[in-house]
Image (spheres, rainbow, N blue to C red):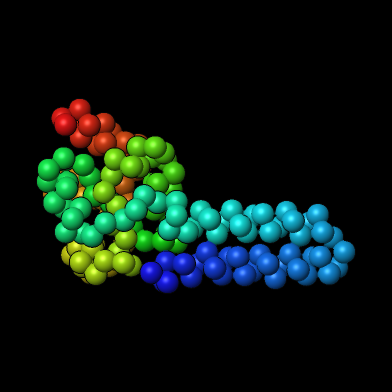
Length: 148
């Protein structure tokens, strides 16, 4: 759990130190702007932006029932963030597995990627796809929604 918050906490710390330095040097407006940028970066990289993760076993069980894709991700991954943002509200139709919280999820990703923990790894109909295009992913969501 704490590993997922390391990057957001570091961003907040760096932003606070930079803002404090700017306030001391007499530019409080610049300090506020930098602090806002770092707060936004921290929030985007926090686990809060992703839907609540579930275990790999639960995601596979649910996917077998409803046909929805399973996305293996980790906090701080720029490609996972890109996929999450580009999916928009459709992201809640996907089963998300945080590989830092779930050892079985990390093992599934390593099995699909020659021993590497490359994320996002998306499993659609039992087939893994590493770092898929978000447009392709939306098409898969549309297909799973039309068959349900």
